[in-house]
Figure (spheres, helix red, strand yellow):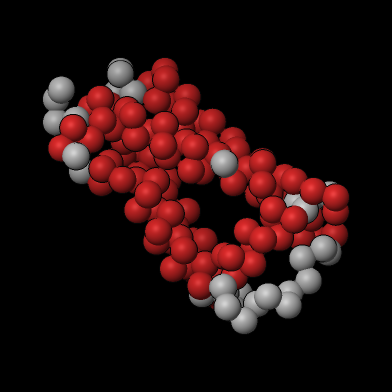
Length: 144
């Protein structure tokens, strides 16, 4: 596991981060149409936690928010992939810090919004996602 703390390991982990974030994009985008909404509905139920299984997920507002969320998440995943591909070798520490800062900002605001909206279960899920997405990038990489 110590190889993940090297620059090569961080660059590899950026691909994991891009996939973790970007994979939610198509799921939520599919939630915009009734015929393909089941993966988004199941994901939202999982993120909402116990006691929220009876929520209505088919409103026009939720479909619109699902479209926005899907686009943002997919774009964010692609941005991290692009940083990995075209920036990391030029500025590994700056890239790492930018990605970690974005993930911490997302986790904080998303978790606050989840608690305020009555779905604190998602804040717990966010902790798992940030641990997976940041992985070994919490600390600066050693030279290879």
